[in-house]
Length: 323
Ligand code: TXA
Ligand code: MG
Image (cartoon, rainbow, N blue to C red; front, side, top):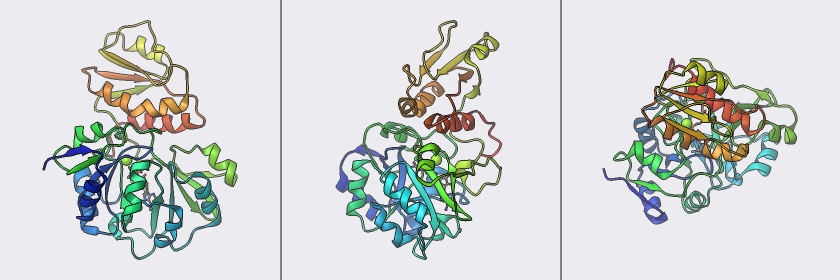
């Protein structure tokens, strides 16, 4: 199969209506999209991603008023969050209606719904009469794609079309929110911070587990992982420790000058969290393409978006015991 990268909405629509997969831009990361109401279409997502079927998918809709087509009940705090943060990098786990196929929810009785903010994908959704199931468009366990080229780098020849919406503006995945016993629970850290959510609904429970048999696969300990071993800690100490190794360095602000390296990247020289999130996955991919033996990286201050970035760095550093 030849993979075309382009900006032709009609072509994208035709593939989706024919039950095929395409790459789509969102404000967070690129998605691998299919008709969420078609089991035959969604099965291919799992095949192409090599994703275990116990992993449920996010269903993307055009507007929050569509939630009620797919969810049987929308609790009040979720309504408030959706009104404030959607369209945007937030996903809501809600009790599902019958029309959502089991394959989408991994057989569970909840469905994850999200209204993406990217204008091209919003145009797609406006013209479709079905929602789009879409995980991040990377092979299972690897770093999420934030450009059309990243998608093609790994899925070339496996999907007919990638809708090119330029580089993703947020750069980390959506925050996944649920209700657990009448309280708002955050299942995955992401583009909307815990602080922003708590400012709307008060204290939220954090359920960011790292178990080996998770309900939510985004919670797998090893995820978002480069091929080269990534080590997280104090950069100066690590650089000393790995003095004799070929190393790649991933700094939050300025790249340290006290050493030589094979490759180095700064997430944001001015220390801006949004810029750092936008640069994170592209930097990891670039460093992963070098012949370094290790990638040395440092955590960000652990608040706001810094927390979501740290979560991704920690999973990138975890051993691949689960994936
Ligand atoms: O930003 C994003 O959310 C991107 C873009 C493409 O929209 N999508 C994405 O999908 O990150 P994926 O499949 O890589 O991650 C989906 C996350 C996983 O952590 C999954 O476990 C969780 O959402 N999830 C999906 N359905 C769920 C459900 N019913 N209950 C609990 N967690 C669910
Ligand atoms: Mg993913």
